Length: 271
Image (cartoon, rainbow, N blue to C red):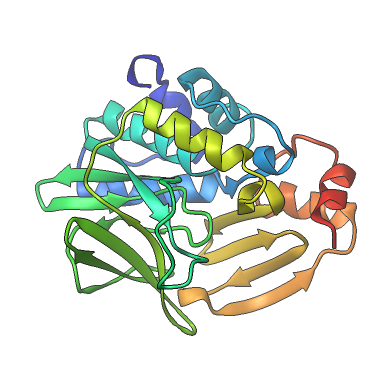
């Protein structure tokens, strides 16, 4: 995406006014600003609309179009911004484990994440894991608890496979597992097609949106809208009663313009 990437448009979109330097402070600040301005949302898969990963489409939707996106869109955009600033970034792919029993077989690579090299060492950066958005980059160090404003995370390693887990109210929960094999655009195109079209996967069957802003995590799953504090503690929760309430939440809390009439979206959530 580098040759076609419009950095200043991106920085304006996320409201970033800090120094533009390829260092850890900037990486942290960019990830915070990105998550607050461009929420995770998978309305296109949910509405059976195609998700395009070419540079023009990603920028038109997430930067110019007052929309959010899901992992491939989010992290391709974030990667392009980091590279335009001068960061050394490698795109990786993960196998989602959030809803999987611990002893279940590994699934396909349906998640994108980033490894960023800094003088302090390697960091894991991820702006698009919509079940539990990672609110800060993490050191590539295993078997230690790493704290952010809204979460506690831990990387572990077994052979060549790494696992990222988040502490929740009921204990540790694995987000995804991954190896260090660099991915290319065609790898993401395949994962994107599978994830956004398979009728048995969550993004095509459930309305899912998430945003981190103002020190809180906002989450929408179908008609259930919740606000979380640190480590997934639910501090407010309500069920949306009609399309008007859904439209209000999407436009205000998630700061996006729905791509279809709210009545159509609400009806698809099914209660």
